[in-house]
Length: 304
Image (cartoon, rainbow, N blue to C red; front, side):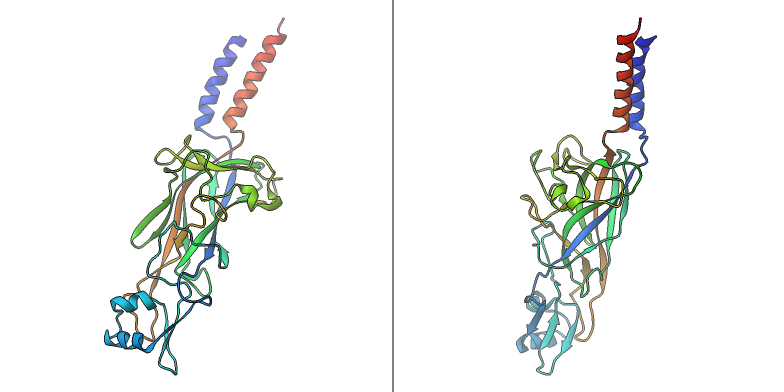
């Protein structure tokens, strides 16, 4: 009868590979860094009298030149009749995904649940317009944070694909990993760089893979193991990576085309989205197959 055990083990493996036995979860959030893209080190920009005259000549609307100089969210008349524009990082344009640098304060977003069942799940993070105080238009995707959920599992493999910054004009994908070589470290460092003592030294992986993708043929994969099932965080940092470090994202969406001198710009929220999947290591189907196969060969070796 033991000759039926191997086919049975293969059948079970196929079945469990499509229906996960694990209810493990990771709590996923983003680290965001504020960046100042115009003005001096304090984020302040003095507009001279010529700019003020040009402003007034357009009856409250930005001309083509002044739009490049003062695209700001608030304007205050000072005693010297200059406009002091508190830019705090406001800018008319930025190249999403370009290197936004490492200067500026950081904040964390709310969290999304990533179920470790081996399926692709869309992660959407809506960024509050007041994520920073004072606020700014542009920032950097500083890190991905994977919080342990104390569910009995500590070792995970995750994949990320199609990272995008979205505003009213649509989504700009800057992380599809299609132009990178498998094995390259892109956007995110290996988890040991920023996770401190919350994870073990191995596995310690963050690299492009051509073995899994939500779209196209490649994605980013990472593997890590928490030191225990407590309150632990694995962090994938974008600082110091060789390819696409500190990717610039839009933090809020403002219309600077028409602003009264004593008024404020109306802002709308933006989002960061991507697709992610996760599995527990080893995957349940692999563990069951190994257990059954081991039992089969043990019985074969020990039968009369």
